[in-house]
Amino acid sequence: MWDLVVVGAGPAGSAAALRARQLRPDARVLLLDKADFPRDKACGDGIAAHGIDELDLLGLPGLVADYLPIRRLSVLSPGGAEVSATVARPNHVVPRKVFDARLVDAARDRGVEVRRHRVRAVEARDGHVVVDGTFTARAVVAADGASSTVRRLAGVPATAEKHTAIAVRGYADVPAGDDVQLIAMQKEGWPAYAWSFPIGDGTANVGYGMLLPRLHATGLPGRQVLHGRLAELLPHLPARDLRAHHLPLSPGRPRFGVGRVMLAGDAASLINPLTGEGIYYALLSGRLAGEAAVRAAADPLAAYRRDMRKALGRHLRTTDVLARAAQSPRFIDAAIGTAAGRQEVFDLLVDVGLGAGTVPLPLAWAVVRRWLRDLVR
Image (cartoon, rainbow, N blue to C red; front, top):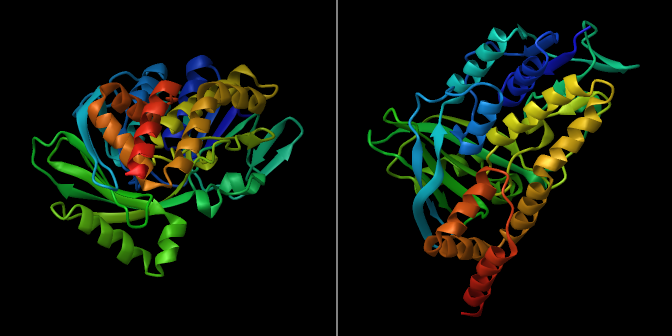
């Protein structure tokens, strides 16, 4: 009998396993993944300061300290408004091939058993869950990504297409001194944007993302649209190693699981609908799922759901409302234009887009006032 079986060894799954052993060093924790590590994962590779906080809570300070702190962020809105400023706390860009492998190694060092295994069956029984007829657990964390097998087997519906984005990611050469994260939004097919996130070694993670229904509406092959628009927005950064991936965006009130199966990270549609950021959500949700598994073994899902709502409830409702408003590119123009002149608005946008921030009414009104003024003009 395992105290916890975690399926998927990305940031969410590793965080769940690490936290369970951190709180209960005698807990029997099994971490399963269909791949060997290190392995590549299509992603923007950005780790915000909020994610670093989660690593600290997991007892992993300095896990990415050898990577360049990125202190500048530039954002170009669909209508051409631009803001470039210093973030309150630096971000990091770490290739997932490196980051995920370090997390798995840390879990193994903490006593988590790590196995390569592809899950094909999940069966709920009285007071426990059986995975593939072999692994019996008091709790299961499904952290197996956007197309989660465990989520499907547990009977939780997948994210609706209208809440799904698709992005293509690659790498490009940049000047060695490049230390500015760039987000260039595009009015065509909005909401859509390209990015360049420098790693610090003379390369940058570059990519382009848009909503899946908008891609289908073009009637063109996805490769043609995604690769073409990336080259159009970042012509000075020819990309290599391009890979596409789906992003199940948060609908505001995501499902956190069923029975003794808890969903974490992408499997729970925990991706910020404004920015596509998911690593912070993954680390946070994985940590809380691991806590629930060992601290509330009688009913882990109820504890996990309560803790997630406390940690992210208001924030997720905020991003849901803002994502609806952001369907108008002029709203984003107003937000970026306001942030260009007010550091506190810039800091707020970063906190909402990369962390767990909410929007105080006075700052929301400042953006709305500018939006209305621009509409009148």
